[in-house]
Image (cartoon, rainbow, N blue to C red; front, side, top):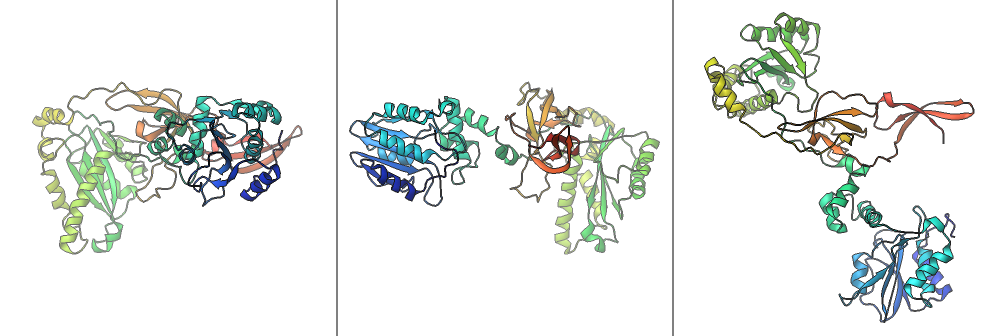
Length: 493
């Protein structure tokens, strides 16, 4: 049995040991991308599986003679394409390989194994030499035939975590390894590196807000115009409001976003029309004593959403309004909007709207309610297929701003569990954290990514306290990527 503390052998070390062992027909020690142009009739050799640009430490060996072609990897893996091309002058020649893993992970025995096997091959056939090598090593439980699934995983690991060939997506990894796409997906869903950094879709179909009548539900938002305040009498914000059914909109300029000024602006609208429900984000401009009193006095149900999609109808209106404003800025040669705002909003309310198939002013008339509803909500089939199942471990997408760095993780380190599945036109999910606490809101499939590696070890972010209880040293730690409620005591290993 070899010492686990053995250092990896270099090219020079191997050549010296080959000379000491006097191995017959030895052609040389090569890097996988620097093999000879053509093999001899009889030869043996050792190959480093890394390229010439790197200092790899995993060695494999081969033998070619009149009886056949033989390849040995102490991890039991198949030969890479470069060695296949080098040895197989005739494409019909078969290469005999060993499917035994005789090397434990995190050890550097491969070079020694190659030397021992090549010496044994001088007197024994390939199969007997492998068995003799195993018998001589007496490594017991470290030697085992690799199952197909384990072999696939080793191939995928070596390719994915190789900087030259890996850290890629599903299709590229499948192309490079030739493994079934199902195995590739399963493997990637078990890797922190992949599930944290996989791209997060930003545009996808979402649940429609089903509104049945005028003024049933409104949405409101605050648009910042701070850079242009000097040109607009110190007005810094636009309070935008829209009726989700008719798409009729109101816009009021604000100098501040205090509760008092925001409530006063909304009150001027409510005197004209008022909704049964008002949806906003959870900003302080909407959640304060003045706004609370206003909604109560007009008997309006005020609520917020917890998805990064937020109030999509008002956000679409904001984009439309800003597009019109910036076109006018280009025409005017300045950023003055106070004089054109009312005209822009009037123009919008009198403009044909694709979703309602009429103008917002026409859609606000009671006699058009049925037609608007029919235009907004044509029949759609309910989906019965869900990507995840109850109990699945998932990460959730981070709510990234438009200028967030694309190379930073797109998904939470913290893991969650699927708690409920909501079937409908679009499937959504309720989730819980690992403390069994429900997370507010529903999540779309595109906001979740599967993580299959239930044996993944949690990483310690920092040690907060130390103590000794009954002679046992313990640490109070914060877990990386998890909120403080998960802080806990563990034994000091």
